[in-house]
Image (cartoon, rainbow, N blue to C red; front, top):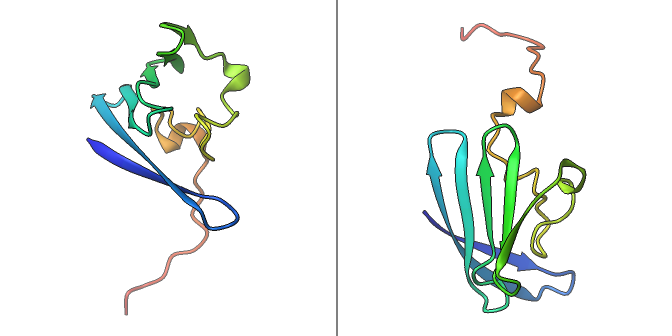
Length: 104
């Protein structure tokens, strides 16, 4: 799947980043930037059990993302590593039904 991320700063200036995402099942995903030349090639691999790897092409190697930095911003966006994690919402949030109404 291809996607675009449009970043708008406080002055209204826009920057567009292009990315591709491939997912296998519900627990494996790879997210890779393809455009804005400064970001192209940066990739995040998400695996089961909250395992994440970040690939930085400038250094030519990958590194594992520790749980202590998952709340930090990802690649200059307002998203955190935790936001792109492949985890069902039911694992992160507790749902509670407050009220039901009849459809009369």
